[in-house]
Length: 405
Length: 170
Image (cartoon, rainbow over all chains, first blue to last red; front, side, top):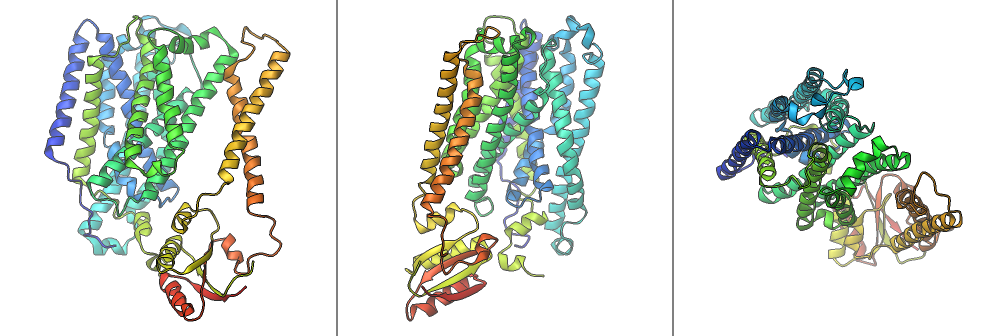
């Protein structure tokens, strides 16, 4: 393997960028109109649903890179840049977090109806300070990880002779140091987001596992997104030589494992609440699985994020087949979005109608536009493969070359 | 297990083994067996073997275990109708745990039993071509060859990346 082979950046036409920009603008417009209109709560809750969904997904994708680095994994090295591309959304996510400050009165019920015994934790200043600080720290670390990964590749492509002499070098060492820190902080800060931005919407209800459920299910969503873009980019950018069917098989197995684990984390909370049968705990579940308009949504979510992927991902050949995996990953992503919807909306929306219409679709389209725009702009500027990554190079070498002293 | 004269190629890398298998098969030589420390579906696909029937035993054990343990729980609950905290006599939510445990228990027992029976274990006299390294980190191909075929097979295995080749006879 030598530099100068097919290691260019992604060839994504300006038409796609224009489309994603238009989606982002349409979403922003719809949000502003919604917030200024009679149903501003719908706009704010749609914004919050999308915020927790897309931000969790983006952090989860960077966690995938960090885990690859921590475990010295060779198998998924060719997927590293695509996972980093999903993390390109994070600076936008940090800025979008502060928009929530302007809707705090509508979003957080504990502002209008304070809970005195929880006031030390549930107060506006402390909530935005701790979440803003946590997001800033984790975003900076994730950006540094991506920056050093990309920097090393650019140096490798421009000065291959120097880089060949320094396998890994400083950028690689920095990535090795940052990865475990990101892994630990991911668990803490995403737990915090789960507790503060979702669980606190029903301030009398609590589940100690909720934070773990949020960060693990976000990782599940990130894996589904990675499966989707791996299949898409493999086809459109001629990456078949680097992303083999067995890479896709392994990624499919990982998706299956986290389908089971997310389902398990849901069930362990559900079982304990059911068994304890305490009114202040059961009301959260009963509202979502017994009451109109949420009841059918609960079953749809269970089917989309657990039952269907569980049955499909049992099959080995299907895990390598794009005609199966692209729809399955879209179903999982759609299911995860609806799951965030059913966690957030019933706590805020008290009408009998389901708050799911053109406004929510446009705001979701806006967030999707920002994510897709970040991803495409990033991939147009950087090599599609982590060419300087020592483990990627190791994985791509023929065996005879690997054994050279 | 006696067999005709054969050559055993020992490979350190899976990729080389797979490439060698494809070449041996393409050239029409007789692959007697393949040794591998762990299961690889790719080997099975190249050889054209059907997947092992062990999985069907495992599935049958899983279904039997899950259903029978839930059946036992249902029988016990109906025999002693103790209503606790207003919960139904037959609560499906905790029965998921019972079903899961029963499924895992009998599927594992059936899989191990099927593995022993189908593999005809324990094998008193191992295959003469077996090398203890095949249970560690090496792969092997045993190719049957007679007369002038021997040279061709030797060359093929050598070029495919075998680190060691030796004659094995029944």
